[in-house]
Image (cartoon, rainbow, N blue to C red):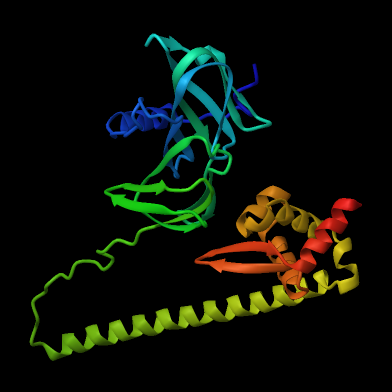
Length: 344
């Protein structure tokens, strides 16, 4: 039996109860049990603020199945907890498979040992599926590439909160927005890179408060002068802030250029450069989201950005802009470097 939890994390019990309560009121549509093909239905309910997700998997077989059953986990997390696993036998008996279920941290598979089973229902909690991209903005990856082509797949992601998504994928999907809920349904067995941003409220401006006017010209002049002084003060502050930011930016930029100056000949001797090329190469023709590299390589975003810029300038990497996301792919020159590094 593999260890279910990668590391100990304390999650507020109220968050778990809230997720479970919400799911109990959300209708879930599963494929018909009499479907001639095996089917897998996945529901992911995520809370970006708590960085917690509740996942339900409903696996149905076309014939009774026995032995070890591997079910790929389509989202990455830091910790995983199995809540409940049940099975239905060919004689329609309900059996508890919770103790016969484990999570393989190496293959990222949920492993179930079953006998004469036609259906398995799995309920788990996955922690840490969201990466913080900015203020109230988050990134996650839903990877459906590991699901067998022989299995009919239905996958739905529900995110708590009012968010607008940017999805980078070659696969199809649909988006539905409900009050305090974003729903994304996936159509293909491919990778989906998702960044969510908070929706701007329609009522951004404060309500207009009507006030009575006065005929006292002296008072009106005082109010107008006060408002003008306030605006001038704000403009002065903004100007100073912009100047300071520009000075800091150019100083930091010039310092970074001196530090990172490498000749083209010595470029591939840089360990970070080599690791970036290898990380991109391992994704094949699909490419990788640039925001994932700091986590994968354990380097600051600023360092990764400078290295990517240099690789792009030297013709090793193509940077493809998708909304606010950079997708990185190796060029022909980059693939030659990747093969050279792999052979060393």
